[in-house]
Image (cartoon, rainbow, N blue to C red):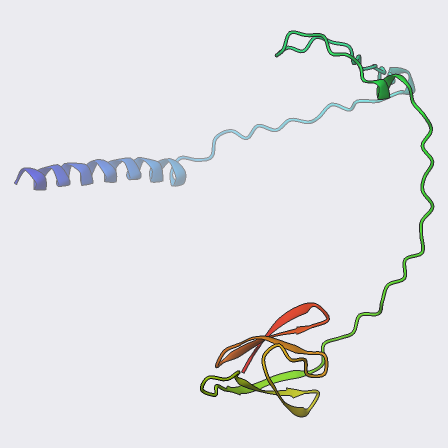
Length: 158
């Protein structure tokens, strides 16, 4: 009985609070509207001041070690650095992957699995780690195969 009374008291309190919020939002008019206008400001060339330039000092006390920092030899002397001339790099043209379709595998007892592939529309039979038109089977599963071509590996799904 005590819990039921507490629930009713809490419900009444929530309704009163939400009622006050709704009353303020809908029935009390909006408060006075405050509008203000930005004053016009004119900038002239006389009021512009250029930024000051600062120079960093490299000889200072290290706040953690308590020692003075010694400037390195590279900061005291500067030598002009010549830019290396660009070399002509000859890139080998990238050979695109042939069109490959994984057809399946026949697992012989005690031997290497026989792999069925269609490469560029031609059916091929091969074994693991033996290249077929430059494509080497790396791993074979019932539903997928991992092939390598020009040191790039791809997975094909049946």
